[in-house]
Image 1 (cartoon, protein in one colour):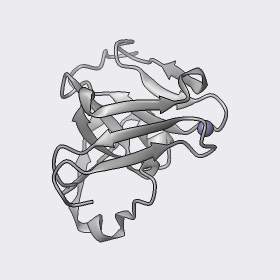
Image 2 (cartoon, rainbow, N blue to C red; image 1 turned 180 degrees about the vertical axis):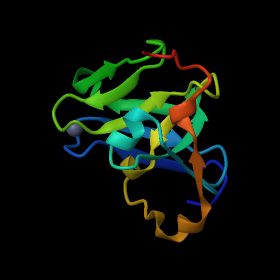
Image 3 (cartoon, rainbow, N blue to C red; image 1 turned 30 degrees about the vertical axis):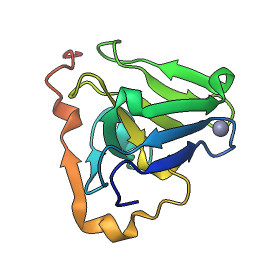
Length: 130
Ligand SMILES: [Zn+2]
């Protein structure tokens, strides 16, 4: 997991969605966001990677997109099990944020002290809803 250009498999809970991810560098931090959708999804921890590094193997038909607020950045979910696999980054254009829990066999315990908090609830691209 810590080698450069490591290929890892990603899947949702039911296994309908299968992807591969080429890690451009070692995972040295996990981002935990406090925005409305991340905090409602069990504390969603993520890594952000170039979009070109994620390859869909199977499960396109099991994916659905959810948009909110600016309606520009889709969050991808499995329509069968509800797993939130990834979303398009607002903070880093051209990147995808991957739900770290979807990496098969990944154990985040050893990275507990490297979790970065992201203040997504005050994201500058959010529209103010009143
Ligand atoms: Zn699923």
